[in-house]
Image 1 (cartoon, rainbow, N blue to C red):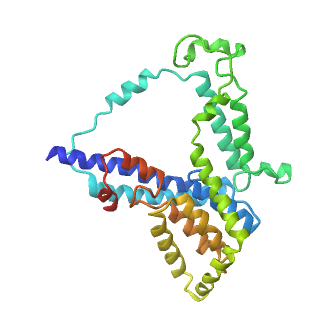
Image 2 (cartoon, helix red, strand yellow):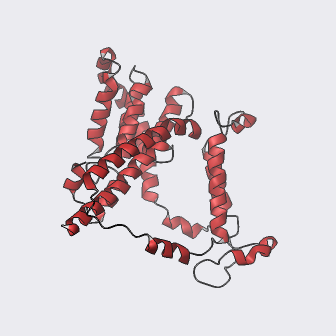
Image 3 (cartoon, rainbow, N blue to C red):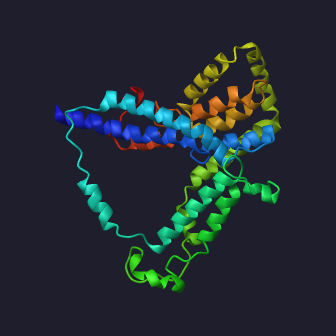
Length: 309
């Protein structure tokens, strides 16, 4: 009985991590590809960009609320008093073996923090430094700047920082690291190019639908929604998109659905926004989102386990 309780708790932990990744992606524009598709289409159709900070003001509280709901649900479904108490001594021992941070790790942390700060302060309400440049810089500017600096900044401690030499550890492999940048072009081979091409293909698919005239034909079917109740419309849109993205990629679903919904006469807050968020709330099948697929690939979680919550 204890073994079955432990297995049940293990399934809950695996599903909890996957579903938390889905929900957490809603909090920021870079959290999931569907948010990026919405940001790009919003700028094309509405003539204004969605800043990183503005989206966080909306997405972060929503993600936190959904995580609390999921935590309560999973406690009821998977937690048991018969599960042995978790011992974190092994995790603490492994953390101690890591030692102090290396120079390259500190540099990456500093660049990540600076990039996040520039994202948050690019526009109001947290700042507005883009106004100094007539509003031209987008959120891509800090990202590209940090990426370029990773190809320039040294991976080892420079001579001017030799005073605190004992404070930093050398990279794995031992010995004094070679003088060179943190990133080299060979590292680009390890990037998930399939994900990047999938997102780029989604934008290309959206432009293709628009250029071919298929978008206008599809949008004609949305004219019937004009008379619907404004509280009923988001429910219907969310239900349809959720059912669709369970059997298709969430990025592919957003690439097709979001441009079509922008052609409707309803306000985007009633159609486009719920549809985009619904693409991140696909929990029932492995192929719906990458976190679902990773959870299923462990071999511990079966499809029926994903259908239960």
